[in-house]
Image (cartoon, rainbow, N blue to C red; front, side, top):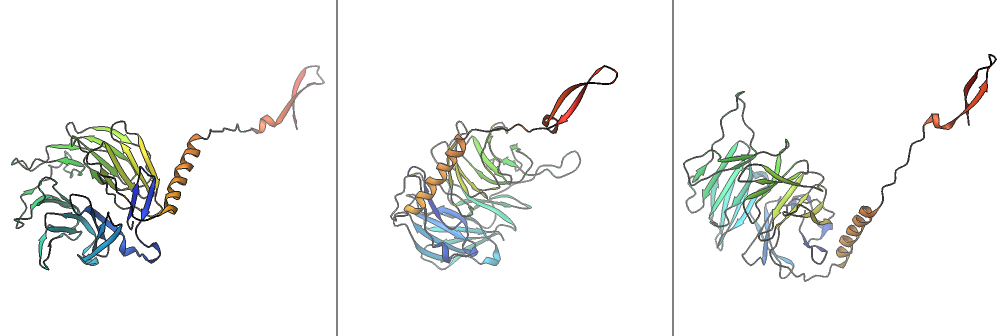
Amino acid sequence: MYGTRVSLTKKQAFNFCEMSCLSRDQEVCVMAWGDPHESEVLVGSVNGTVKTFSTDKGIFTATRECGDHSQGRFTGLAVTDSSMITCVESGLLKVWKEGSTETVEVNVGNEICRMRQNPSQRHHVATGGKENPLKVWDLERPDKPIFTAKNVAHDWLDMRVPVWVRVYDPSTPQRRPVLEAQFGEYPLTALSLPASQDTVVVGNTHGELAILDLRKGLVRGCLKGLAGAVRGLQCHPSLPLVASCGLDRFLRVHSLEDRSLQHKVYLKSRLSCVLLSSRELESSADLSGDVEEVKAEEEKDEVWDNMETVTEKTKKRAAQKDEASVTGVDGKKKRKLVKK
């Protein structure tokens, strides 16, 4: 919730904030790498500040006021060569240029749920939200979107078709989706593309994770082990792994090849988002207490997994009675129940 680094190879978790002086308005909403070398992490909080964390020094090095709490939470955070991009729920997208107090403001519509950057064209971003269809923006020409999605036609009952996972092709005049995939009946809360990009991993409000095939629109498989809504989800940039976090306060890493659970770490605080590193980060602080807590949690899991299931047969009331054979006055044998 407030900034934790987890090393799965060393079985260590490091909290870089003083928990005793934190408040709810410092809750982390979004995270993004600040440079291609992954030496800085940008952390956006509920109170509208964006902090810069140095992975080499292990400390926060800068804080910038990038919004007002009344405008809503951050829904996206990204960087270009010399600028930082922020977007909030009210639909205000800002481009913060380095070394300048002036910002470029773009109104992308109300009730924005997510803003994402195109990794291959970093000046292109996509936005979408409630009653606000997908739009693609060119921040070099932000006057109007370069692509606006169009909803599909109503069904045979003239009712609106709910939005699940849709694939669009902005290179064609077609503004409706070219493919649609459905999963379950609960709202989706997180989505991430693996390195192969022929599938997508989605999570919903009931802790269900699924791998969807973007070529056929079918569910390829499900990832088990979660409890509670999925809050954060990210696939590794090069390995077939996906990390997820949710309301149950566990960080889980699943394999996308056999869908097995690779790692499970209890992190105590409420988790809202996750950011994976493509390289091993060294810690400059000695936090052995947190290391012991992670190991203890894993040992508990192993103990519970190895315990045998003991079943106890319930004793019925009839089993507590004995049968006795007696001879009646007519000379016939009869059975008589005798209580113990």
